[in-house]
Image (cartoon, rainbow, N blue to C red; front, side, top):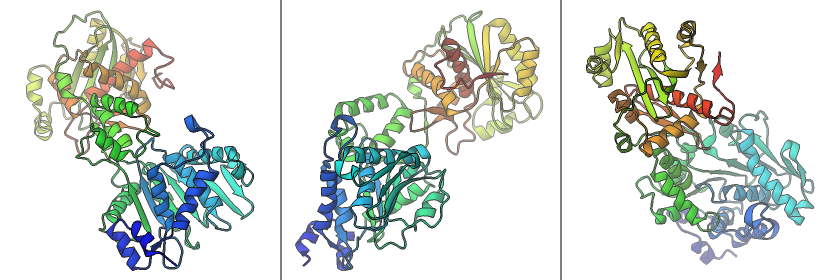
Length: 534
């Protein structure tokens, strides 16, 4: 008989109480079955625990017991969809691999089809590789399963079951019959197409399980945000859904992200799979940079952040040196960012010997007053101060930029000029015709910008950048945001909804710094050089 006292012990929310009223109950035998599988049959395959039994951490054990222990009145599993959101380094991939193996081998399903899905082939293969390693180091599993690495597949011939990898790039098959699905890093899905294709792939099974395991993302129009929002509403009792399991582990936006108590709340594996001292060091590093702070909050504390974050700490910017060394004749590298119809054309020179920047700017004269009202900055005053040049007409006359470049070539020892190929090919050729051959295309990719951007950021934070306290460049520095990727690469972007907040001088400066870095160490600055002389 079902013991109501056992069910009561596992009833922790109003949603659980309502589920019990509808006939759901907690089955301790089913809960302990999955725990026993992890402890007895699975072994760690990498790191300091390689070869050891997979002894679940307390939070993992509780999660799995709830996920598999709750039943419906008919004896099938209560939960069919699970959303598990947790910061990096908390053992997410190994837990995912163990779940895939349990659903394949130990869930009592004949002809089980188990899949792991992700945004691309590499990400999709992470769970498979960890699972295959676990099989290889487990005598019990190794004797039962066939490993087919070429197809990223495990087969269990005794029950006619298999586990296979899917990705957004490769998925085309129809008619799959899902018993178990591990959706890895749902936040990285570029569209909802794969999710929608797989969501009802287990409709013919008696108790299919679709599990999303992810870290927080940034895109609030994504399928991951949709699932995150739904999970929070189920967890908080706003939506009643007995079939949806919600586990969201993270800090809140208004929490003190530097507090160890907040770290522990967001990271249940802190002190086990995560070293406390290393975590504290990461936090201290994040204090020094808005970009690193943004990444720390998202990846280490599981806070949904904006993709872009304002980048330059303006207190550090204002504290940079005010002295201006004599730069005539000094080696310099240039960056040229020509304008769209609404932007500013910018040209920058970087002098690495002095960590110095000089910048020049242009807008059309005919719409300068209109731009002044729209962008809320004093273009006409800056023009009177000779900080920006107003070229005749309603579009920027590039011949004024050409003349400025010629003047700088006569004044400084300019080694090369990196330029954004968009809209600049004709001007670049004209400068070559003037006798300067070192016009270099600078592809506007995150990989190309990362090195220069990090050097620029370090000079600002260390207050060694001589930027001349040019008010236009200072305005642009206060506007610029950065886009980051999971590998820590960064590139400058306009802030969201910030068409009037111009940043053009910053990319020009970064291209100039990039040219100097290539000259310093051409083989190591970029994985592929990216800067192409044509």
